Length: 226
Image (cartoon, rainbow, N blue to C red):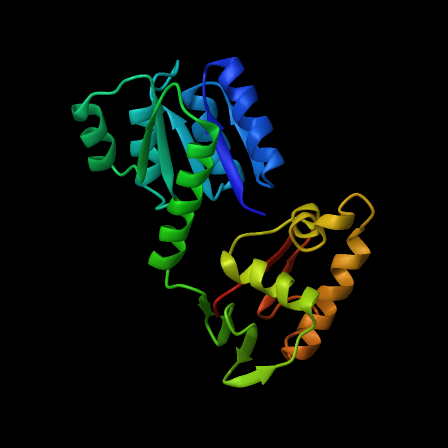
């Protein structure tokens, strides 16, 4: 599930965006000021940021510079200003798009989808390569050390999630939400553990959790490149 951080100091606009994007199927995070936005970004690693320019404690420009110093995650600026200078500044400092208030929710959704498509294309399209592992999302194929690996749909989705961010630890709850959204409240750690075991078996990986798919005890699972 795509995770969007909404950094907006206007409570009504924040509620509106959260309700709309949640209904559209996105996972949303909220921040009411710049410092909170930066903390949430570092903690939760969103896939896209909606960033208001005028916020207390840290303005949007400062947050954008901090984000760009460590990440290329897509950022869409939100502001009441409509000057060409502000638009140029936002794009020059690394924003991917710029929306002025009052905004139309359908436009926000369209811009989010467009920015995410560009980000996916820029990152190399639908093929994820992590060390000896290649996940081809268009062909729905997985190869490990050149060997084609037959996976069930759920096994594939789980491996693709881990491969989307090598080195990042995914918690059991995050995995359930991404791979089994239809039963996220009914699933358990044992379900995830079972499918991790299946993947390790098919990838001929170390089943003790020290190989390609690593167990981080007390936190979750991660995929490493080497």
